[in-house]
Length: 216
Image 1 (cartoon, one colour):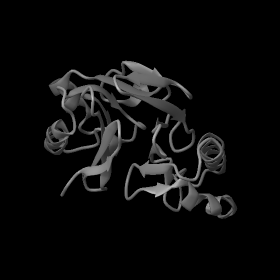
Image 2: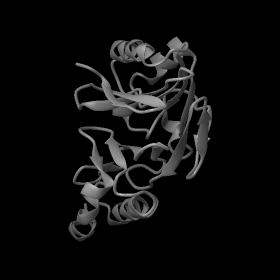
Image 3: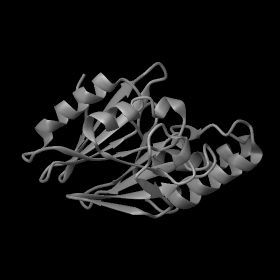
């Protein structure tokens, strides 16, 4: 199956699903420079190697994996992380509060609003507390089209991530998602979740009151 999801003017977005709970692994490749960021080395190192090989066709430059970014600390999002770091030597990034639980040292500790400058594109870290303490969404603002939000397990089609029936955690997550995503980006923004298919903020926005009322 073709992993290419979006062929944008400046970069490509590729996705594969790995593991028994269908984790999404995303790869962004700058067309002009070959700079790459992989989001969530979740599982199946050979499949991720294949993803990197496929993306070599997306750039006229020599592709290079500049960063492996992790949305959050949960086991199903990090099982191939150590192997990929050992193989590529790429730097790692994760939210400050989740980093100590990752299976490798984290080179870049992320807080809300931090911007990563890569050769050909930028990514903004958005801290979304509640699913885990240090969950991070990564946002690419395409100058020629909608923003792309890689939301991890904090926002899905149909609701926010699991907060284990904890009202405080649910309130924190819904508050952060509302303020830092829905209030910050337009309806056209594409949401790429940690599992499953993409959606848009516009498709989900009318359901915010329902989510708040049901408490999950």
